[in-house]
Length: 488
Ligand code: AMP
Ligand code: MG
Image (cartoon, rainbow, N blue to C red; front, side, top):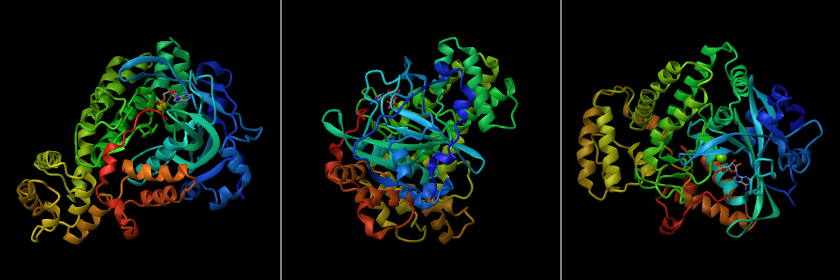
């Protein structure tokens, strides 16, 4: 039976040992009482080259709960800073997360991090804990995003405990083991920049080049590639968020991955009915992170990163890279939307047709996920009344479908193949807030069945799962009253 720690390396620690106070702090986990596994991600374990029985080894569960860390592993908390809601917040850091080390997967290193395992020097006034509620949300959402083809951190397992945590009410402490290609954030560079630590900043960039771009030289051209990659990947990730109807909720620069992966799931939300003004974070009073603002916030954050990297390369290179953002974003969004519509090629009028569709989805408050799933069955020469029924003004849909019919005439794929392609990109199931809430309510009573079932559905969101049909319907009325804030 595999022991996780026997495969854990500590490359980051080795690279920066001696510069401890500039990049990280050594930390110790604080045990939780009565650890119980809520979900074990056997699929991810296998992807990582472990056996499915990974979780049957008590030493692994002891490690993943933070209760017993073997002597050969020195957990570290990373320091970073950030702009929060557009305002410089100064030093932050892993206040409740600790990196155990890295595991090599197919020639790449993946970080293993425990979230909620106790305080660190960066905890400020926090208790270093994560509650079961927010841990279930993070777990389910990151796995859902992965299944939807969006680059993201993953979750290997989630452990609940009887350790009390005090939020608006008393909740239980949980620990998520998060897996990521990198935990370095835009804010990691901002931290060094604003402290004038140019040597530390360069060392961090060199580390990233060595780890993620091994063939690239560590010089001005290499740093340029690192930043261009951040620009392009961030644009592509956000384009996918917009196409799937996902709102992150807290796009602070400390929650932006240098590799452009989705990270730090807090008060996120998938849209039910289509609404560009959707604000998923109850604490976001001014709507800075409203759904429609995400693409421009991505660029704002990259500007903050460019400033932080200004000691590494000439400003012309930073500006040239930033100028790629808009076109990368637009191309990514168009590609994603065209495939949702089943279009094999993109034609000049497609953007207009997509914008017209989004406008009528918004004015008719149509369920975004369900519309596209229903559209998979669309046939130009047949009655598509079931889809039209989703609209308050059916004539809006009838009018749009005239254009869609016209456009489909130029497509060469046969209808069955188009339907199959569409069903592979338009999920039947997304993580709606009320679904997470039902799973959380049951888990708080000690029943984890629903959480596990949801994980299975969300890992295969394009499958029919007829026994879970109710989760493919529009949300129940009580869901409208749910609110999600930063409290986690
Ligand atoms: P977030 O809004 O979750 O991205 O967190 C912002 C900062 O607050 C990060 O540096 C977190 O590590 C820290 N933080 C959030 N919650 C806690 C907590 N319960 N204990 C310690 N630090 C926390
Ligand atoms: Mg964060």
